[in-house]
Amino acid sequence: MFEFPRIYSVTDLTRMIKNRLEEEFPLVWVSGEVSNLRSPHSGHCYFSLKDQASQVRVVIFRSYFQAMRFKPADSLKIICRGQLTVYEPRGEYQLLVDYVEPLGMGALAQAFEDLKNRLAAEGLFEARHKKPIPFLPRRLAVVTSPSGAAIQDFLQILNRRFPNIEVLIYPVRVQGQGAGDEIAAAIETLNTLPDLDVLILTRGGGSIEDLWAFNEEKVARAIFHSAIPVISAVGHEIDFTIADFVADLRAPTPSAAAELVVPRQEELHLNVQRLAGALRQRLLGLVQQSWERFRLLKVRLKDPRRRIAELRLRLDDRLEQLLRAWESKRRDADAHLKLTAARLNLLSVRRQSEQQRLVLQQRAQQLAQAFAWRAAASRRRLQHLHDRLAPLNPEAILARGYAIATTLPEKAVLRSTQQTAVGRDISVRLHQGALQCKVTDIAPGPI
Image (tube, rainbow, N blue to C red; front, side, top):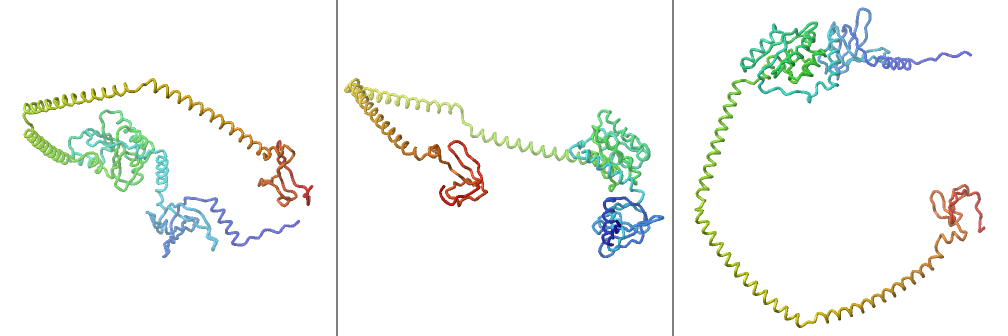
């Protein structure tokens, strides 16, 4: 049987191609030369990215274009990241770009970001791992190139701020093949030396390739595992390396590292003098306060012999008062005792006890009789109520052969055939157990 081929509309075909492109190429990196760049009033950026044989249209939306540190320009060779899509009104495929960088830096920049993200996920950059920098280190080590200008600036500023600091310079290569290995080995070696307070990594500025030794993973892990606090002073203020993120402190420049690691000696002397003056004034104030207090206490203090004589007189007065009060209490107690004895003689305790016993026996007999009468009356009333309730007990009615029918699932008691219908489920409770039934017929009157 002959089958007609499926015929697509242009819109359907274009949309299918668009969906397939976006699924197959969700994110791509493309390099090429910029041509025909234009940026209309909308703020979007349009250009073609070409090489020797082909070209592709590129669109950068305004939000991405305005946030880019590097802006593309005609004839520049770039690397860009984006998503392939199809512009349906013209049926042209294009690249929606969100990141652009000059060609030649892309691999290093991507490697930098990948390592940075991986080490950050491991927690190497977290503040809880940062070790405090000593306020005034006595001995520090500098890992750098001894012939570079960075170490000369560092030493000059350090000598000017605090000339008594002992500095150990560990020479290494700071760029080129093998520089990262030397820097990592230097950190590990310096951690075996005694009495080192701070370790400083430093070099002057340069390109990303020049600073790459400080972006290597082995250097980052050596800094992280260092028991000695590490200051990273690599490049200029705008340069950032992996070592900066892992180090316990980042200095924007080698000169700034010297200023951060030690305070000015003159400032310390001034602070010590200011504190000494404040301490002296405080001590003088305390001495003056103590002397004034002593003088006031001396004026208020009386002759102890006079104080003892006053207390002795007061004690004699209190003793006389106590003796008079005791004699009065004793006389009152004797009088009360004699009065009580006379009253007891007038009363016969035995006679009163016998009378109370007879009264108690009589009351006990009366109480027993009343209790017996009330108990008998209560039993008769209980039996009467039981006899009246027995015929009304549903269980007794069910025992005589009756049953209670209820609807399901409402469990309403059936009193009329109008409460159910044929096919409805009902429950029939008997004296013993219950039946689940289905209504098959309804009689019009009594059975």
